[in-house]
Image (cartoon, rainbow, N blue to C red):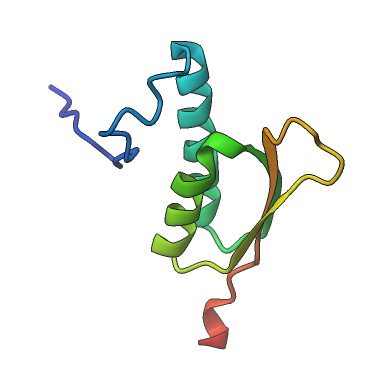
Length: 94
């Protein structure tokens, strides 16, 4: 029988997502999983992310020891979207 367990904490123990609908929480979790998947590679990443995921994605990048930058989308009055840029990882440079 397969064993299941926590792969990664979402750091949501203090009601951080209480104001969001379940499907929105799912989207944030999926987005974080996509970013985490790329962080395990040496690839560069540039993509839009939800502002609600800023801290979780920043923590993932720091934990993976990857250089990254998160900036607000210019001209987006909603302040709902951020641009994530993760530099390519060059393991031979260390």
